[in-house]
Length: 147
Image (cartoon, rainbow, N blue to C red; front, side, top):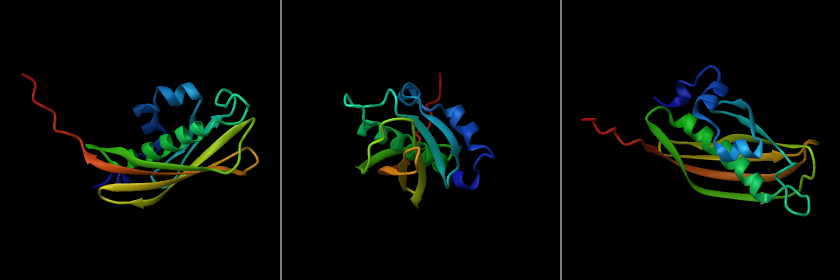
């Protein structure tokens, strides 16, 4: 049985228990919705810009990878781990102020692989970046007995 079939009632609780990671915290990322079918997080533009004041393309990718990897791990379920094997991004607009929002939806949820698309938009709802991430699902190694 996959986690998709036993998703916690509040996926945000699952995110809090797991942690979003030091990089996401440092960048100011906030998860606002989290299920296998849809995950949403925001990121402030301030503090995540290039020297010329535009949102850094790498910040879009961090937002996309955080959403896609976390969603894949939720889907993978207990005893399994999602590991990223491919990510790509197309930046079509540059945010210069406010907040960007990433909306992550699955393209493929399989037994051994997931593919997610993350659409990142500015405060006016204009698409700034489209990220696609592929994760391989692996079984966690069995714990060695303690002596």
